[in-house]
Image (cartoon, rainbow, N blue to C red; front, side, top):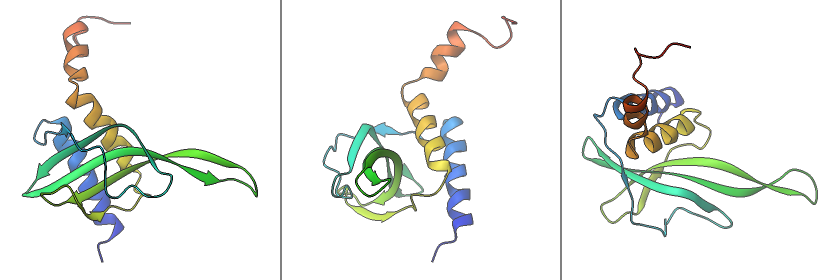
Length: 129
């Protein structure tokens, strides 16, 4: 069993390495993710990377969650998983890891180079508010 603490630290390492450019994520061409179940629906892009000779996939998805006897609301979740060379799920990180949303947002920003865009438009040292 892998401790929640180690999983959180690993996720924090991925966030840091992504921000620093050590880990590069690519938009996946796979649209039929094998770990999507039931009424789960992928939202946005699916990202993949290779980290220490292991492949990782990250995506955002929604699914209906029952809020009372007859009412369901769609909630958004994030999924990070190890995959094999054929894009098949090997292991999924627990859904309750808080850092998964931060990782997804970091990957979105870095893969679309939005950080560079803002740095080019508004250098940190030239404009004061």
